[in-house]
Length: 341
Image (cartoon, rainbow, N blue to C red):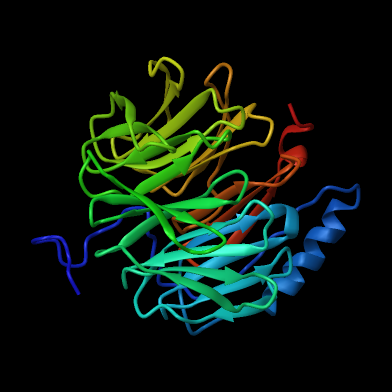
């Protein structure tokens, strides 16, 4: 298998691999009997212990109560929330899985890995639907379009490929002007791709043509996380320079720099209404920021692992985090703040 020259098995700061192997789940507490629900969920979690494999990364489908986790055994497990019961184990990759994303309707999962493969899976049955061939190096990121009709993948072969979700056919290949492509996100209207390579820039690119329209520059180290706001007006980026930057998509100008983490940023996630942004860093903290002011409103430090998956619940009242110490934590933001702001 071909690899980037001199790179070997490249270090990925966002691909967390921990030493612990227990799965512990909190509860998403939305009702008045929060304490009772929490105890029940913790009791369920105590019975969901996997001492065989460690978790590498994760993708959430909060509205369907699902989380997909890749493991060091080259498999993907679909787990139910909040109890953590394994619904199915997906087998087919022959090397580490670096990319996971659910389709908008939650019926399909895409995965990509160090075997250069991109695979589509039926969530209900766990059956592999298609193997998408074309990449010639590691696949590090994947995302579905908002309408679910196509998907994008980013690879160390220095391309971003667009695929038809129904047929699995390749629609186009976009060269990565930033070199090795390791992050891709699709704007909420499906018109733009946010691409990240090794050049410390975010490349905003037309999805239909592959034409680059802006290169957002300002970070002083490697970019390790990106996320569009739900309305598509902003894109957030996190970096090894310990900062989060917010950019206006229309103009490409930076509007905020959020400081508080003491290490690289791993994951970013906007609340569904866009009013808050969650971040997770290698400093083993999860922080929540007010989107308007840029002020930090919450900080969670009650875990030891690095976060490999981060998402708000559908209503924005809870926050999910999968850690590389093999825990899944769910915070009740209503209880933390006395209300959702």
